Length: 411
Image 1 (cartoon, helix red, strand yellow):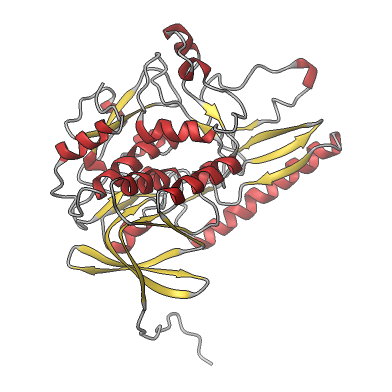
Image 2 (cartoon, rainbow, N blue to C red):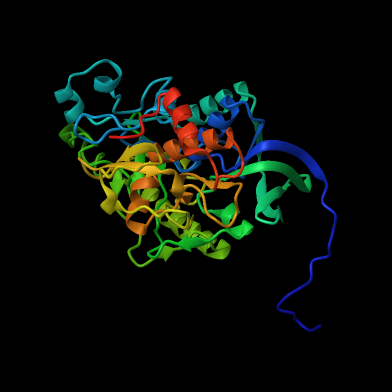
């Protein structure tokens, strides 16, 4: 039998299984924030999540560091849902770095010394977020992958999804792409771009040793300078075991190639397995508790939007600002994020949030982490509650709504 390079998939009718006002694709931090804001705006919201828990990289990836909501100089930049989710993440107690100076009226000096940052338990955070969204009436579809879109001109009318039941269509008024890889943008024909340098291999895990559970930042550790406590001489090399900068300097992957992703995950698992066995041979109480269950993709594909933001725009006034963020790696920088980074010109009822927004590679490293993901998610959800042609949205009305919800827009 002759082997073919392509096959023709039979045409078939897809049942429209449900409808919603706002479909949010991706249940990470940006998706949670977007769903919250849209639901609070009175919209019927459906949230798609391909895994079976919320939180994305923050929970399933075990990157459990809620990076700073401040500029490192004692000034809070992130408010609204960004701060609400930080408080939710430590509702049952912080794993480390409880932000006492910020939550309990600390002085300016204390806030400068201790950035508005915390470490949370991933499982409690995921469960708390699920409870919150259900209370808001959000429909959560787990194990559900967006496969395609149906368009009428430059508007998405349906999103084709696949789950255990097979394929179906969801009728939509608007879509917010929070997939982290701009999957919906790509499917819908919006202009997108790939990160030029790709992703470094990483796989974080929790381990138990000598009566304590700890987080191992195993590869590409997203931690603010000075966040870890100093090495405790009584504990030997335990803090040295907590942070590993990179697992393989020669391996980089795009994050948008299926076979490549599998190879990267397998390579990371191998390195992690070796690491666990090494420490277990020295300490028989050292055993893994849980491992990252999704690939640790930091920057892959993004929207090329109406405006592309760069890190050189530090402290620049943005007339269409929808919120602010600092820079988790350094003290001082502060950025107003313009609404133009959330939408493109090709698909009028599609927004991007989180890692998918329109930024340069340099700015991507700033906007891909939890606080700005929550900021852009909230803005996208609030925008979707106002209308579904985002190229003509009344920005002043959106800003008024965000301000009313506690968001600070300008420096």
